[in-house]
Image 1 (cartoon, one colour):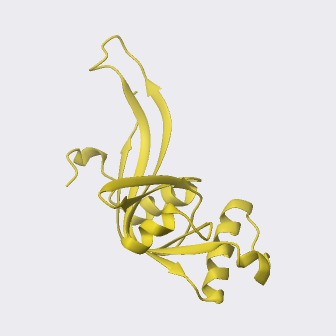
Image 2: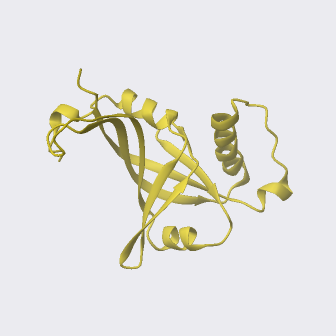
Image 3: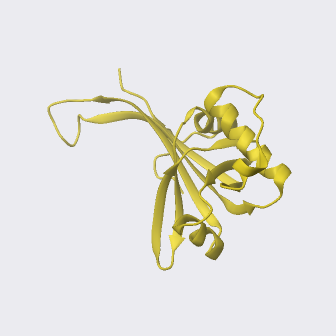
Length: 157
């Protein structure tokens, strides 16, 4: 439950726009009995987030052990300063938390779909071709989103 309802972003389309504009997400996972967070590039298609990673490593170990994840994106637009540290300083920002379940993609067609979504987001191009040898060196992960929440705090005029 969000304490500051006046900052809540309720419209899913706004939350998706913030996700789509963001270039880096922080992926939160569980590593045994402690949290583990990593930054990553990602792309959204509908209720799916795609990312890729190396074929081995702690990230994949965590996802195999517990596929429940949280992704966070944010954008800081500015800081308003004033004489009082507690009352007069504030920041202007937008942030989104996305909760879901990760699945390591094994099927070649789905792997291509995820890689194409990533390449389109970061290059603007849709005409990428992926050869088998290049695809064999990367792991593609799909996150099925369950929920999105977001906050916005504008600079006071």
